[in-house]
Amino acid sequence: MTENLHFTLEEYKQRVRRTQASMDRSGMEVLLVMDPANMNYLTGYDGWSFYVHQGVIVSLDREQPIWFGREQDSNGAKLTSWLPVDAIYGYPDEYVQSRYTHTMRWVADLLREKGLDGKSMGVEMDGYWFNARMHATLVEELPQAGLLDATNLVNWIRAIKSPAEIETMRQAARICEKVMQVAVDEIDVGVWEKDAAAKVCAAQIAGTKTFGGSSPAIFPIMPSAQRTSTAHLTYDPDRRYREGDVVLLELSGVRHRYHMPLSRTVYLGDPPEDLRKTAAGVVQGLEATLAFIRAGVTAEEVEAQWRRAIAHTGVVKPSRVGYAFGLNYVPDWGEHTISLRPGDKTVLEAGMTLHFMPGIWLDTYGFECSEPLLVTEQGCETFVDFERKLFVK
View (cartoon, helix red, strand yellow):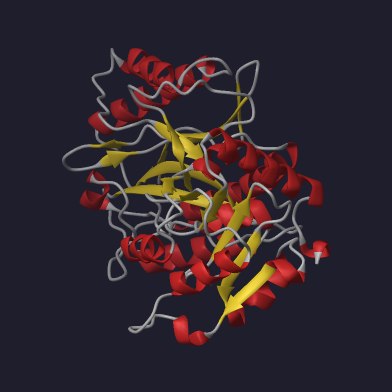
């Protein structure tokens, strides 16, 4: 049902062809894709069904992938993917979370039916969605297949975005701007943290007047006070904001599962001098690094430029300062490919999208100010228009 697709049929087919070319270079004749973002990328399938086993089978000798999943989800594949009915297979409920059998036995039977059981097969070994029992069952059922590690094979193909994907991400950026403004406006002394978080979630779904948002892969990260001394804490549901609070905001706008993350920091009251200095140093370093990023430099060169830019400030950040992002589902909007850190020699190419995220977490508080960007031949383009500063209320 191609009328429900977010991209053209030819774009999906091109994605499959690029995947097949990468498989061929890696010695894989068949690829078992379990990551829901990779499934979506190749077929358009978009269902909240990844709590059970599901996947896409890509073969070098088939133009169309084969989708498999729970039988009651197969109509979702017909509604959201470009695949014909004869490429969609649903397994019966007896395989769902069974103590007596396993879905990979059914998948092995499907591979045998299609004549793919004796071919070299890649699986996403280090993914969230492929586990040890899946691997053991496939080895038992298909001893001749010789399973190969295809971790992030499709993710790397996703690294360079098409013009249509970039336009979708620009829409996510417009949602992100509204979401962040809601957060900054709502956070104030005496306000329940849960109430501010609820309004942020509502803004993520409401989107803009012309298009709506998808649910984000990461729940709004909105820690306050000493909870800002670490990354990835959410709001406290039983606490009100207080005078002297630092509040970190790591939020995202999302459009058709394409994310646009952004971080900013709010202070309630008169900020201490060390926080002001940290904020000024981070923003200065961020802007100097953005001016450096362009196609042709490596990921580790970007991180080295960041360290040079902040060397005089005393700010230290031992963790990576950014990563590739885009299409994804829970639990992460990152693509698990490029990391802006020492040792990553990936050469940046036009069309890559990176979240430059120089978050600083000290013993008693933190500061975040990030920028999502598009790598271009001339430099980089930031997606979001939102002031870079410590917001004081």
